[in-house]
Length: 446
Image 1 (spheres, rainbow, N blue to C red):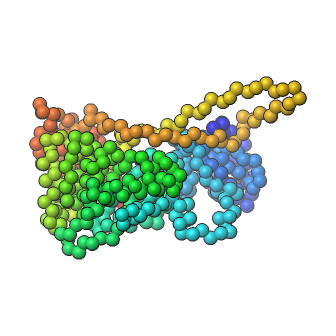
Image 2: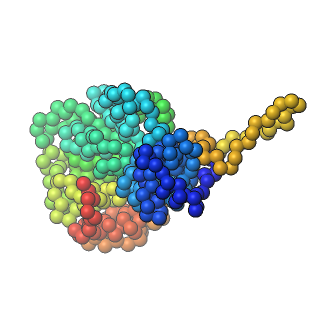
């Protein structure tokens, strides 16, 4: 991308002289509100804008904007800024750049969904919904949070980068995915085959990603790494069982207050970081009539030394809580940051050497250095997942909630009655969760 012009003294003059016909208000780094007629792109170095209709297109460096105010007042532009920081140019087309056809023609529900990044795919009686992040996605977060086959309710109607999972989506550039199917369960002890990922539901999920990748013209979606937030009667066992079935696709998984953990770990799946959440007064397994609870599988496969963090909520019962959500999201944040590399742009093709102009030919006039139009950015490549680095791991004593740097016995297994913890920061949070001392900020876990 060519260098955006940096407006120093003149920028304030231009901003203050903007006309009343401007449509978009942003706050400058000097604290003053600025009116723009149109905003074309969010580029790595700044916004590509028009101050007035039909005026010259100019560049406004990000440093000239109040980014805190941008996040609060113009979420769409702020989300594009986050993507642009990674080297992409994100079309915004606001104000004078808005497509006039969209103003004249009422869009169908499907068109509205796709404009907001939503895609749907129904396979094997399961309807999967996926919302793309702004910019090139680095992975997929499957929100499997339900007791009766309806996880769609967790993110229905959410705009890109907003809602309960908006900050997660913006921070990691992950697509959000959920599902819905008609359950046949009638009694608490009934269970749907959906939880058994190796039967058909797991393949249906992967096939849906392939189908959506083609529809969205983003082939990389089909092979993106998957993080799973699993909770409840259906969501938790699906997250656990899918991880054992396709460990090569899973970044990390959280498994909260469910049961029916039926799949046997393999040497490969035991190396996928997983958080097993339960309440210390949790009787989920008894209500569901399952003999495959979190406690059973944690003890049964301890000799495999899996990367499983075992966390019990202080006085916790069977329900979801803001504390559970906080610990689960913190775990996923850390695992994604450790295992999914940042996007790296493809190297540009070398420019062809210019041939000398023949006699009589008039060479093209060179573009000036202040040309604000960004060059097309190369499409970033989605890198492969990294193995988890265990060197900074800790071990926590389940009874006392004390944690220390990890130490294994001669067989490479941590001592009985302890759990693996991915690093000191998470170990500290784990202790607070175990002892009921987590302090949440306002709005967290909503």
